[in-house]
Length: 169
Image (cartoon, rainbow, N blue to C red; front, top):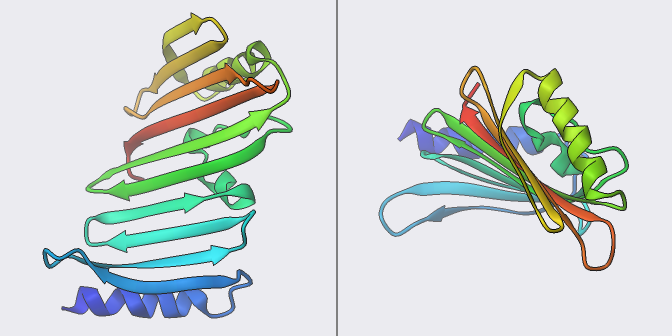
């Protein structure tokens, strides 16, 4: 019972003094006795939705707010525009996904991330090139893994995705 009281109080405290425009907050019941809460902040270009329950937490962000979710301390590709991101955690595991666009080439993007993975002690386990798509998959000694893919966009430039996950810290 106390768990259910902690979440609303936490959200009330978090909302105090916030500069973000709060668009919506509330609670939900999934029909099976599980309860949770949600909050939506920001505007159409930079938003963050947080969904929390006893099972864990999911954050969905766009624009500048999405950059917080970059996994394994891997930086955003220079000059890239974030399209969306999602991060979640629960039951001792966490994961994140980030999608971005850049006007640079697939080779430039993958070279950048190959160097980043090496500098972060992430061993490259998989490397795939197929047409206009390239993918790198790697793992760090602590079991965290990352998958980075880049595809040439039909309108020029590149759309890339970073997906990573591992144990919660």
